[in-house]
Amino acid sequence: MLKKRLLTASVLIPIFLWIINYGSWVYTFTVLILLSLAVIEFANIAQKISLRPSLIISLLGLWVIVGCIVVENYSEMLVPVLVLFIVVTLIWHMIDYELGAEQSWQDWSISLMAPIYVGVLGSHLLVLRMLPSGQWMTIIVLSILWVSDTGAYAFGKNFGKNYLVVRTSPNKTWEGLLGGIFSGIAYSVGLFLFLLYTGLWMSDIIDLQHMVLIGTIVSLFGLFGDLGISLIKRQANVKDTGKIFPGHGGVLDRIDSWLVAVAVSYYYLYWIALS
Image (tube, rainbow, N blue to C red; front, side):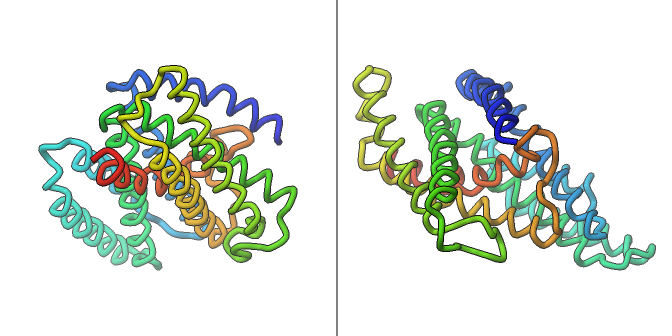
């Protein structure tokens, strides 16, 4: 399993870093594909517990929500679009109930939750890339996530004794949490110094203090994103959200921490660090 995980990561990480650096429609299209696959996995998990969310409506909702958030001239349309989306899904599942569905309110909830959770949070992968020095910011945030996740796993495996949330994620420990945060901060500081002294980074864009705080924010909120999807998997009694990545599971298994950490990091960078 570990060998598969390392092999998959060694292939995917360089490709995704190139896509982030290239930007343009390639990055946008890649993110939309990932988010769409995540919504599909939501629907597949729901089906395992005999629910029937509307995948087509959820995907349409995802694309429109992401478009409203990302396209500047349409951002004021987000609330009306959400209202329309709620009403359309309500009508759809009322009809479905009349046709014989037994759990329409649960189906309706998933049809709403999947695109709103994935779309609203996931769209920040795109708006983060649109910030000044956005390619650097995106690479920094995601690489902190990868390092803190690895650190949390290593610390938890070797030193973990005090469990964090037993029902939601039985293998998570306080030692792993602290190890992940420490790893994220240490990496942030090391990356800042490396980029600064090699001339690849300008300290007037973001200083060391903000890098430390970003390391903390990303590591902590990445955990919340991870636990959110773990809660769903635990309720549905599934180990992984999918099988698309050998050794890693599904798309949601890989981007669960991204969704929350990237969104929170974006607002910290936009409102504070880069203001």
